[in-house]
Amino acid sequence: MKPTIVILAAGLGTRMKSSIAKALHPLAGQPLIRHVLNAAFGTDPEQVVLVLGHQADKVRNAIADSRVRIVLQAEQLGTGHAVQQAVEAISSSPGPIMILCADTPLLTTNTLKEVLALHEKSRAAVTLLTTAMPDPFGYGRVVRGKSGVMRVVEEKDATAAQRKIQEVNAGIYCFEAKFLLSSLALLGKNNAQGEYYLPDTIALARKKKRSVAALLCSDPDEVMGVNSRYDLSRAEAVMRQRTNRRWMLEGVTMLDPGTVFVGSEASLGRDVVLYPNVRIEGRTKIGDTCVIYPGTRIVDSVIASHVTVKDCSVIEESNVASRAIIGPFAHLRPGAMIEEAAHIGNFVEIKKSTIGKGSKANHLAYIGDATVGADVNIGAGVITCNYDGFQKFQTVIGDGVFVGSDSQLVAPVTIGRGALIAAGATITRDVPAEALGISRPPQEIREGFASRRRKMKQKKR
Image 1 (cartoon, rainbow, N blue to C red):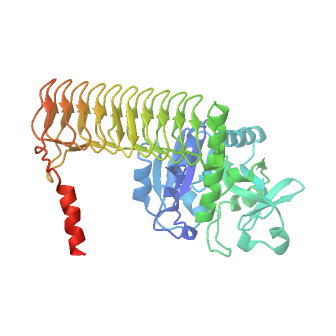
Image 2 (cartoon, rainbow, N blue to C red):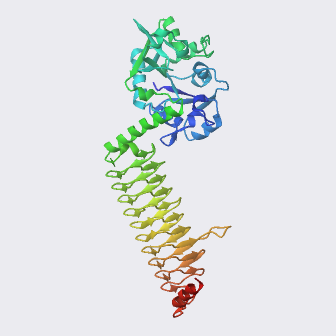
């Protein structure tokens, strides 16, 4: 039967020392809770119930597109108390009930499926996930007897001998629904923290002579809880290593994987080459045979095949067509559309503009709110003056236009097909096709002026 999954996400996360709820802290570009939800939905559950408390509205908003049922834990009195809040939501569940924590983002769907399979095979009242740690401080110890798992003892309640146990509770359980619902009412809080501990259900199962199964997870990192900023950094390193390994096995070259970040929602084509210190964030898609040079950051953008992005460029919410060349030191702001074989060079900024096929802006230009046709040349120092302090206006540049260096195109303005804009021009009116647009004062030559000026300087000395 399909499981019902309950995810506990009500905690404040005191050790994070943050004004942000722990479940919302980002990991690989997504909130911690997202990673746990992804693992949970991979099991094809009957339903997912999310127990919220601290900053419930913010957490709810962060997962608004997920198919979850939300219940509230107004007062945080332990894991057992949190599950008690979900009783109404899970009371009619036909299958097993799995309990997860929102602060275990490295958990995988495959491990959850293994827990479910063991639970079904063993017919246990409860099956828990455990792991072995050389330094288990802070984790509940798994106490075993001749007949298997007897109970879980929390750190603050453990004896000196129990603290030496290296097998720890990962905080992930699978319950027989009937047993869980009956046991929740029997939980007490006679412990060091004065809380209702969900692991106490294990001892209750043994008292009822019910079996308790345990799956030992061979990778302690997978069940690592994120309780501090240090834990978050460790989880980020593990997630990065996992992600980068997966992409390299899919045909991506990373020259220094330890410095490359690829977000969990990004996708990369084959024969992509990522140089050191590259960040691929959000839902970015990069096509085959692209080369991304050092120091580049690409966010929520689509990069077609055979694109080169040179050093230290930033691309945000933009589209780049095949065979385009971007950078170095280029900035594509949201809404930039770079068409096939276009070149955007060093210190060029494109904002909410289309740059046509084969067009070039190779240095020191700003193109904002513009439509640039095919085979256009944008000289150094050119800007579209798109903002008058109140409104944004459009610039339209036709195919084959040559815009000379240091020109200003004051929008709204249209430059016709094949027109020529002289260097240094300030264009405030439309320029017809094949015309020359020029606005500069006539050049004046004063013969001998430089010699006279030098003589004046010498007299003053």
